[in-house]
Image 1 (cartoon, rainbow, N blue to C red):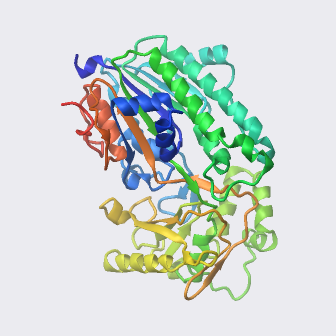
Image 2: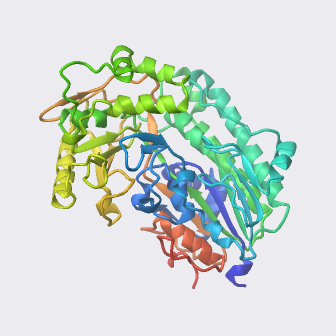
Image 3: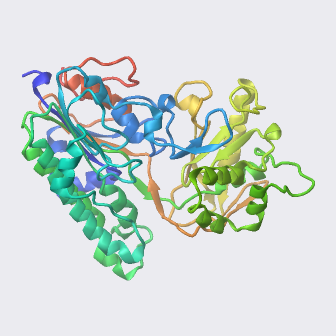
Length: 506
């Protein structure tokens, strides 16, 4: 038997926590995953491509580094401007590894692979954005007629709103129901042919993590709501149902398949940090305010002064997209004096982003590349690490990552210069202190007390997978070339990673 005769099967948990996956597999709750780990190997993936949860599936499936595809958040700085724009993985133009199978006599079945769209020129079937978390576009298929078949057999997509606390029990039941339906969809489609590549991702673990993280037994502090005890094992139940559906899928696929089970990201206790990095940049003098002798009479500036932020946010939902974007840009940057600004914040909810106002890159950049740029990054890091959470008396920042060091590159064209990860914790931080200033922000109306961690997971087994147990030091970028290698395909020069020799048989 050679690799060409062994199908490749990739099954995904979207945003399932690696620590919980390993623990529950070891305790016998996830029998399919436990079987794969026992017969093969597993690892927590590492590297700078895990800095932000946005774009992880893109890097993992494409094998293209974040420093090249440039996608890091759903709202990014528009290159060459000081304006923000909404973006998706589609804008990154990094194609999944199966795009290299065009014209290679390989049949594929791609079902709800996040951050991907159906591609023309491939034999087989592709279904995108059917049951994915927060789809960026309507469902689509290749061939186009497949969408009608899916709707005829399974009805419309099974949408789930995370809702409020009173809806948690209903969401729990609907997530289990949708997981079963997604498994049935996968079995139906995979039964139609023999495929050289099958990719099926279950998104239900993503909303389940956000909704039920606080109910788990080891939550700190324990959730005090009356319904908490009824949902203690809700997250485990959803993982377990996904694991069961994966087992049913594998049971109908060829036994000689090489199988991978993946998770894109984990979870941790963390309250939203929006507003902190903006206040940091302004109060410490990095982002300068316009020197006006009298308030601006521009309509946007007057609206920002008169209408409270929460009201502006609520009202903006009823405005055209272009108007919302203009209001948002004016709110964050409308009173900025760019000729005196050395660095500025790109607003975000959890991980924070800082961009240097670099000469030659920004429209009115003042910081010189080279020594001045490096010195400013050092100064920003020192100031960030001096921020103290007065509630704990400990530093508020967990880690600051320089893109030039993480990716061994020059100043990035589209990425922020600094990624700032805040220390996880079970409380909201309304106030931080610095030796020179104090940062203060109001509590947002909607608070989700968890966010994605910098952990991803992989387990693999099959005739061409070595029984190596736990592996270390594997980058998510190494998966795409390894997948192609296992299919007997050449590795394109455009891929950033390399084949995982410790995983595959020679």
